[in-house]
Image 1 (cartoon, rainbow, N blue to C red):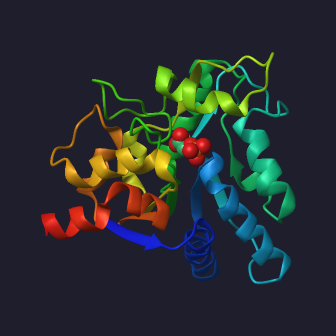
Image 2: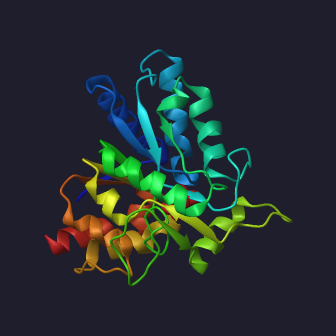
Length: 250
Ligand code: PGA
């Protein structure tokens, strides 16, 4: 696991955007594992800017998203499908036939089977991840069952609390989701995790200082892989004292 600290969120987002662009420009039909959430909004804006400047084309790129709320239609503005269209797909030249999204209103078992088939037959070249304050990656919440294929999850209360600010009064936040499991996240050729701001300081501190791989801290599985890079901003680094931790644990 590597750690890259940038001064600002925009600096980190620029580094990750350049990494994606160089993969896109050097690989035939790469498969990108995409993520939603406030963390990646600046990253997707950066990719859109590069597309508008003619520096990258996404027409041959395949994508798969990590997760989707159960019960939300792709046109529902709270669905992750809507988020992807709004922030990336509709602003660039991604080809809709190359995009894999879970249908939150589909029959759950058939969606799980469709997702599993896709991930069994395709290897992700680069998987993007955010992280929950409880250490979840995708919607793999702290749990005693750890390494699973795509599955249905009941969201942890901490996740509901963190994400409920995206929902306005009167909107009901779903409490279940379909998520890619740890098994398939770990099969990706490379993983990039982004975490910014003070709210993520505690979980990033735990990730780098706790010595066990622990199902109660799902992100801890990433310690087992070399091809994992964590991008954080200076505010988070300072809050967590991570540089001191790293020099201490060397
Ligand atoms: P956030 O979500 O980017 O909105 O903080 C990340 C996550 O929960 O994985």
